[in-house]
Length: 149
Image (cartoon, helix red, strand yellow):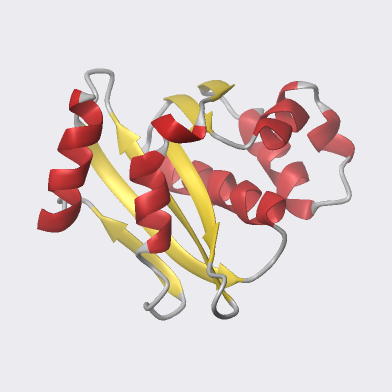
């Protein structure tokens, strides 16, 4: 699961996006969600939380979570999420204790461009989760380029 959060500089829009792939990097599904503008740390925590919820609903039992927010990844890995003031971090901590295998790791922003693109594509959409199980044409071209490089 790759994920990202994005904020518009022009208005009060913020959004999250994520992508699920199998072990061979084949597309499983993607999600995007317009959210209220908050600090980027909270927005990206929400992206992880939403992804974990979707993974649970789809029955995914093994996840490798890739995030480009170093501080967020570190907070989760060190266990400080369990006692955080942010409800999103406490909920992430609880989700990760479920009966599934998870690994979370930091990836450079340059390797997270597909998710950045997905998060930004929801700026004009209404609030509510968008789940895409078949790649949209314009995203599929971009995604295929990212997998190749």
